[in-house]
Amino acid sequence: MLAVADVANAIELNVDDLYAANTIAEEVSAAVGPKLAAASWMEMNRQVLNALKMERVVTVVTVGLIQLVAALNILISLIMMVMEKHRDIAILMSMGARREQISLIFRLQGLLIGVTGTTIGLILGYTISYLADHYRWLPLDEAVYSLAFVPFEPRLLDGLWIAGVAIAVSLLATIYPARSASRIMPVEALRYE
Image (tube, rainbow, N blue to C red; front, side, top):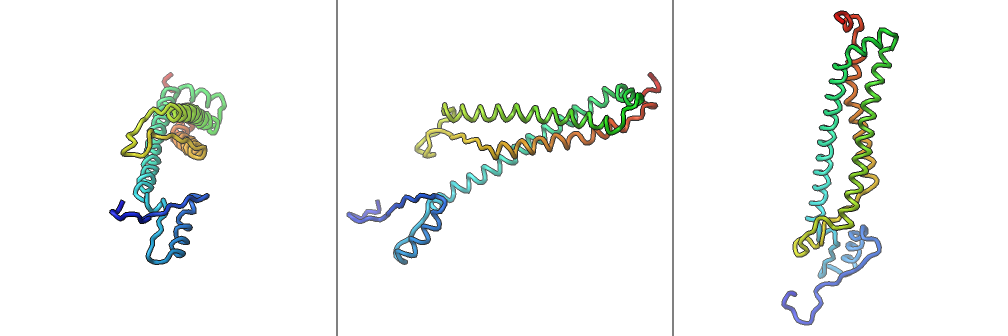
């Protein structure tokens, strides 16, 4: 390897807890002295691990932008519905519906849209991830990446936080349309009907 004949130039250790590799490397380094160096797999693959961390950040930003677009779609849909149902809302209010009830109708509608979209998205996402991993849909060049395919590993915690944020964003998107619907004045809305 280093043009040195019949000399061992590296010793690899397999450890039970691979996340304790840095601690074990420090202990081994202290035991072997200053002439030899010990490096953990994390130190040797620092660039790859940093790239994976950056990929995670980019994924979070991408998911956030997708959720922002979805929230804007919910907002616009509910605003259009308030404009279309202006007369119907005024009739409900003239028949005794309280402003809180009208507001609740639009908040619940936005929540229903968010929960439905989130549920469908989670089902499709986990299904596609399972199939892509099982059938190895995205092959890689092993000489370059040391992997034969892109592994998909859907995590429950990721699905939960994404679902929570998606539902929260859809609820936030309902605030303005719900407030607009509850501020309709029945007399003004029905004056020219």
